[in-house]
Image (cartoon, rainbow, N blue to C red; front, side, top):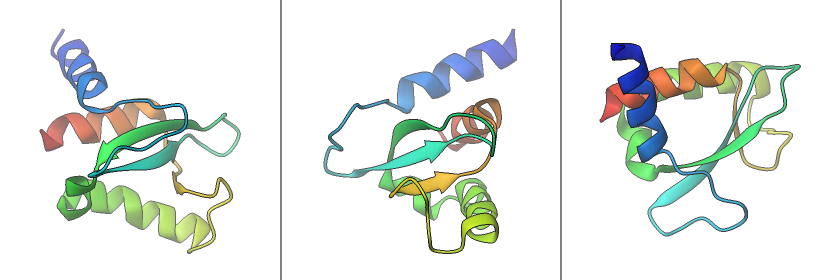
Length: 89
């Protein structure tokens, strides 16, 4: 039950947007190699968080600075992404 609460909490903070990104937020694409990537909009303040920086390190290892989606791509399962971002709150 606690996992479900943290999962739902992450969904409230992370907003999916279709095309525009509001000021103070950035778009990230989340998904594993063979999985379709989903676009999420997260606060830029996440860049200073050690947990989020670990996801960024994983992204750098896999893609370097050439991201195929045109934006920041994080190569992990969505559930891991939600777990990490729910702990940032």
